[in-house]
Length: 244
Image (cartoon, rainbow, N blue to C red; front, side, top):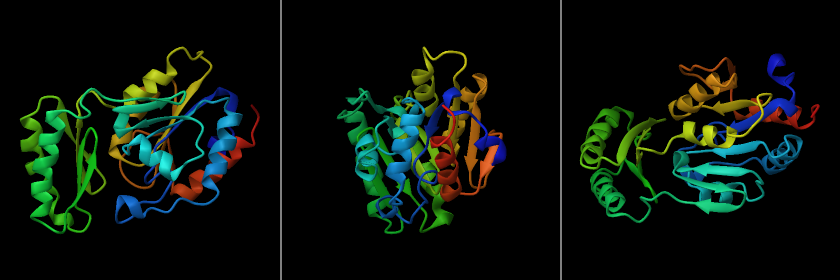
């Protein structure tokens, strides 16, 4: 923590995951609890970083806006399939497509037949959560793999106790690359996340002499690790009060 707290905000571009990173995981996506002070901490940090603060999440932009209504920075949602940049929303070409509609319909058939599975629909795909029945993870993976095999524009990705179908060209790595374009060499990306989906963004950050922080347990390429969201909040408060 000491090494991280000594980083100077004037040299950082911070990329934050949401679930499991800024907020603790919950039984369902809608049952998370956002700490009362989090909006203020992020607003202060955004100002201290001169705007170099972004959220890069598997959630859709509209959900991040609902949970963090005062967040002033850029938001990449659905793993980069959509983005709010400078206040303008950009959406993926597959939104509203027959490909996504078919994938969602087939995923719904899977979850309708098993009450232990939870379906989360996104405009760019679908997620099937199996937290209530961990032993069915391989079964869910096989069923969704059959669906994406029929649609070359979609790929299957693992998340914590869930499998997600999403556009093949939507990645958190691309989000980091996009926002780092044009930044001076003195600016280092800082990627902070808890899940396997954050590792691709960390790989890009490593190539840019960046700093990567893993939240919680599990294998990672990150140089640093914090126990959970509350420890991260403490670090963000230190940065927001630090030397610009």
